[in-house]
Length: 223
Image: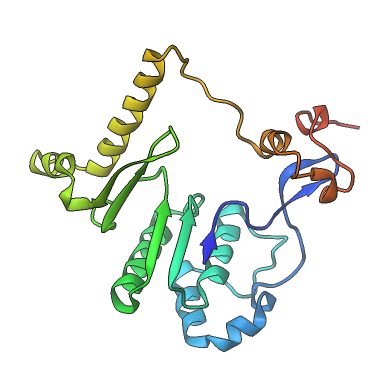
């Protein structure tokens, strides 16, 4: 399974990228066959995520939309789950309950979960392994969390959030290396419009009703 932050988004002509779908459909009517196939797991996730199956998708908030996405993505038991910043928009309680659920999935069913995130609160005892992806197209340190000497040192000093400190140290080292190489602390635009301009095969006119990246993607018009 794969969950990211683009779910329920689409390109709308002369409006832009990442516009949430506004279909008037209840949650209980979405992927209905799958919900009926795993009723116990459905009920567990509904309670865990605080979802009302009567919610209609054109009325939910961003946080509620994210919970519905996670709900639908986790109903079918998975062997491998890829999470890309998917806990964005979740409140503290729902996020922690979700992480506990995923840890139980790993421990009881042997599922593998890869979680890419910039949010490290409450994660220090959660992962079994760390995998550092460098900015030069290769991997850095990888292995069991407790095998990383820096992690052990931070724990021994009583650091309240060692994973945050590790990530900060690694990323600051990348920035310093860029400056030493003569680069600046800035990065290219990474939004949908910029990425599609870099890759001509991703033609936005095919999904945007003739809409293409340009000035209309950057300005609001009031009539």
